Image (cartoon, rainbow, N blue to C red; front, side, top):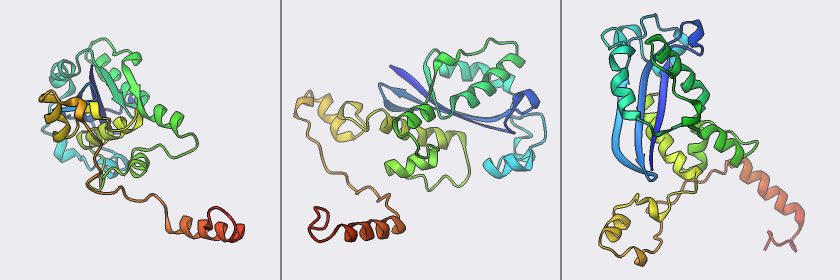
Length: 228
């Protein structure tokens, strides 16, 4: 099964008000395993970059001036995506922009049914909890320290890791480690054994939460199960 994890950066929030895509990044998964194939393209939006958008992704007018127009790269983009499911965080936003750009070059839209929204998955799985990409990275212990600014390809790579955790974690059949892959290739997949993580996941517990927990346990008395 082929899936494309995708992200865009834009000049704003509404294509109906003239906002455009300025960057597309995408990562290919095959049976939930990253293949190493990616798509990345900066795009000239043919309009000035608002300051608010520049502060998010750092893509300014001078940098984008010599980049191709969407109509010049749309064939490569559609060829990469093909008929695969597109895994997108807040899919309605990106699909709105992609389909607006397609409409402006007289091409048919991509049905929303082709998009799998990881934001919706996260909200269903963790109701009431923050579901931004950064929040999910903290929840799953995924390193996003290089994400000082939003970038479509980097965010797609991070989202691919988040997506695999959302659908059940890095299972052995995902083949995400060389040791598992080598044993499978050798025909010894049945000998697979879980191995300890090379590094423990960072604790998600804040200092304030730890202090509050200790105070709560003390109130229960010495005979409580947690106090033993």
